[in-house]
Amino acid sequence: MTLSEKIKNRERYIAVVGLGYVGLPLAVAFAGKGLKVIGFDISERRIGELKKGYDPTEEVGDRAVKNADILFTNDESELKKASFFVVTVPTPINFDHTPDLTPVISASTLIGRNLTEGSLVVYESTVYPGCTEDTCVPILEKESGLKCGTGFKVGYSPERINPGDKVHRLANIKKVVSGMDEESLADVKAVYDTIIEAGTYPVSNIRTAEAIKVAENSQRDVNIAFMNELAMVFDRMGIDSGEVADGMNTKWNALGFRPGLVGGHCIGVDPYYFTFQAERLGVHSTIVLGGRKVNDGMGYFVADAAVKKMREAGLEPKNVKTAVLGLTFKENCKDIRNTKVVDIVSRLKEYGIDAEVTDCCAEKEAAMREYGIPLKDIGEIKDCDCVIVAVAHSEYKQMGLSGLSKLFKKDGKRIFVDVKGIVPREEIKNSGFIWWRL
Image (cartoon, rainbow, N blue to C red; front, side):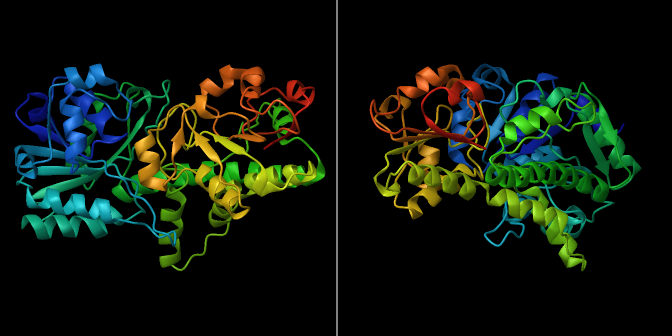
């Protein structure tokens, strides 16, 4: 009997290591199919929340967590019960844009200490091609005393979860799967096939699967960078880039990309994993790094545009009461990881502007812990000279221009910066506001 068959017969446990935006939906999905699941996280707080039925990610919901038959634990000895491990820890970057493999190395060390013979370890965390076999496997071997290929096996299946997306969910996104050999690939595919309605897509080896993840996000990053570069040039030309994008998208083969802030745990990070490995191999990436340079600078560009409008209005920036609406890296999501709104706030401070920040989705404690930014409730935002809508949350869209107008002072010059263009162009043109949009 294969390992996947034993798992389906509830003779073996699946252990999901890392219960964030990726790991928690996976654990809940496996449990929903009647499989025996251990949900492990090093955070005692996170485990406490999950045991109480609270989903801090809002990806699956409190009810799903409460009803899921999952052994939530931060006791690593419980992992000895498992034979199929899924690693879903974050893989961020350092300040110098090199990969920070600390979480994946720590997870490999922890799993290795509790690895039993015949187990299979599948990594979902984004890494550069070769990392699983060159970095993770030696750690697993050292900690377990087992030999990869005979004592245990490994696979890789890049995560494709899009935080906050209620349409493209885990089950309906095709899953790329790989294994170190035919047997491990068959087991990885069979296990994921139990929860992925869209089906799995097997590839020939682990490095290819790793490459697919960094390539697909690098491609998106470059395309957005192209639109951002156009937006910066069109701004100097006095051309509305939003109107240009609308016109472009009337053509059948238009790609549909628009300018914007590019942050988050994937698109703003994964390209650096690719360029890091490319540089190690003696290849300098011009296109991908060029795209990253453009996108990393967009927060500063937005802040500079806002200050330019202040000065055009005859206002001294340091005396302009400014509010920033939105802190998360994308709309309708509470995830603040690698958000580029922080760059807007920090750039404004360089001009002497201490902007008030609000967000209808982000957690106040997380904003203070990660960035030292005290979030205010929208009701506390009033009498502003300048309002910057940085994130297109539905709540802000529903407020409309009339609702947003209430955030401003009643008299004087009022500056409205609409980064994502949530207010129709003609409406804002006729409003009397001094305005700018990306």
